[in-house]
Amino acid sequence: MTNLQIPASIRKLEELETSVLFDVASQAATELGGTYVWLEDHAGSESEAEQWRAADLQLRRERRELHPDDREAVIAAVCRWGSECRRLDEQHGLR
Image (tube, rainbow, N blue to C red; front, side, top):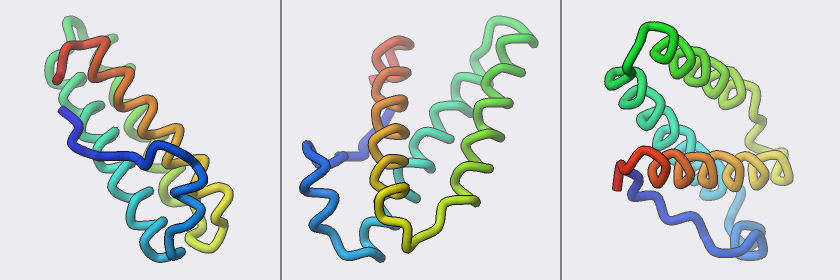
């Protein structure tokens, strides 16, 4: 499901301009949010659907609270969100 190409190393992320880095973070959050929505739509039960809704809401909060000038936090978010998206894609056969 994900087409996002997260740079292979944190060093590459650190080399990006601040505005570009924040765009990468926004894209990573969008990809992960889309995965959560897909999983919610295809959940086997209401409780499972609620789990994915809650995950999406938490992601939205994290994204809103992310300050574009806090490069360390932005890089951590890109790595975390990209990793989670890939994990879910593989776990649920979304690729």
